Image 1: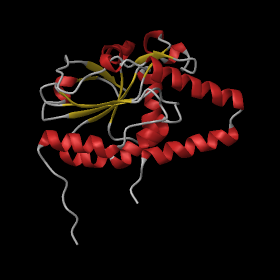
Image 2 (image 1 turned 120 degrees about the horizontal axis):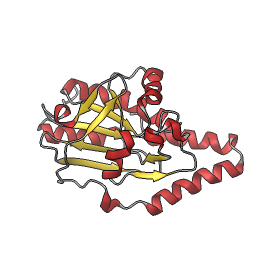
Image 3 (image 1 turned 180 degrees about the vertical axis):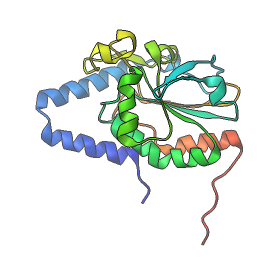
Image 4 (image 1 turned 60 degrees about the vertical axis):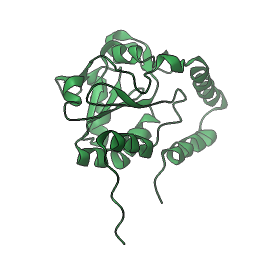
Length: 217
């Protein structure tokens, strides 16, 4: 049976129904509802749009430049909230298991991005032993440009967020090709709903002009 992210996150919600106080659960549900209501999809990157080059801070040190990421083809950008977000700690390992192996075999970079400072974000990379990039969007610059930012009562303490911002980014997956043209975008302002791996892989294969290999009987 193919692993589905919707099932993993559904299990998390079911656990919360039995373990969280009613007020805490309702605050979480209300915040996600508000995020959905306030999100303006027109501000997000659109398929076919050319985006300007950008830079990110690699949590392992140095700068990740978009020109380098896409020099040999597409790159996959996965925006997430913060390193201690429970849903993110389910989604990112899911991508590690179901997205990254194929991307790595195709030579396509995967970058997990949050506005948190590198000193905080390094924890999620070490916790799950990720081989793909984890990067800080300093000052939420790219997240703001993409229309993904929001303020949250449940955000980490300001000192844990880039430049003291009490601001997070909606989960999103964006595929950018070698010319900085957006080829796929999916934003999920309800952070308990995330993008499955297969649509992303399908978009990447389309950019590369490749098809998945048929199973051998």
